[in-house]
Amino acid sequence: MKKLSIEERLGIDKFAVDDGMPHIVIDKEICAKSALEACVRACPAGCYVKDGAEIRFDYAGCLECGTCRVLCQSKGLKWEYPRGTFGVEFRYG
Image 1 (cartoon, rainbow, N blue to C red):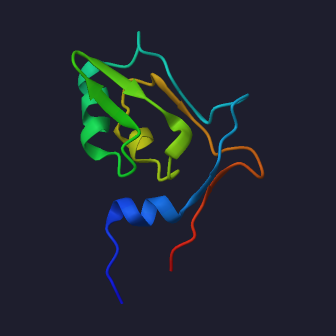
Image 2: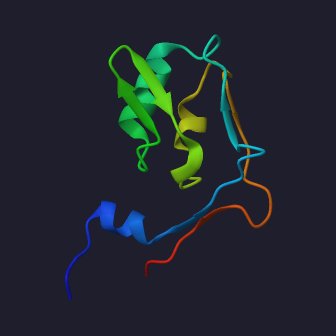
């Protein structure tokens, strides 16, 4: 049996995105750039991406692990579990 890479495993997961009510909201005025850069390095799903001088965020592929919530010390990040029937559905293993 072929061992799957992280990207292949993430591709198997199913994501039900709640466009009307995101479960992570970032206040970029409060959240320090250094904290966001830590999220770029730590997020296992790659939801935080450095694009030149700016850091972009997309909650659509979030694994709901809470890593960014733990890293955020400035309280510039509002993190809640998605509403029922929304979020990630793990389909591997």
